[in-house]
Length: 82
Image (cartoon, rainbow, N blue to C red; front, side, top):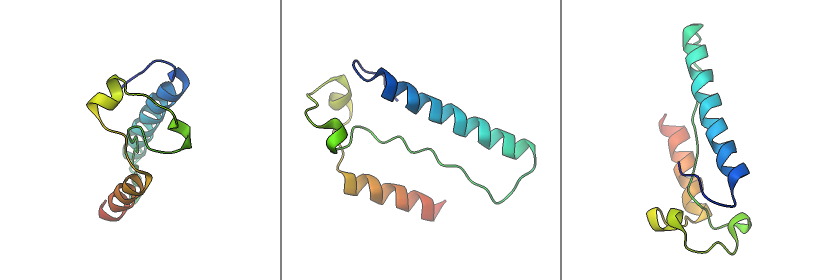
């Protein structure tokens, strides 16, 4: 998870989702709740309209832009193998 310029709201919301999901997982465990799983999905920059016109940055040098179909496949695989 990396922060980047001009995406403060986007990056901070990803960090919030991670914290929320981890806290929920701990709380459910503490309450003895079973049969409920949580999964955090934070794909890298994905080739959608949201990132149209994104130039090479530190983020894209570390991890390439992903195709939506690939991201969707990985999410579905995660859900079904959990």
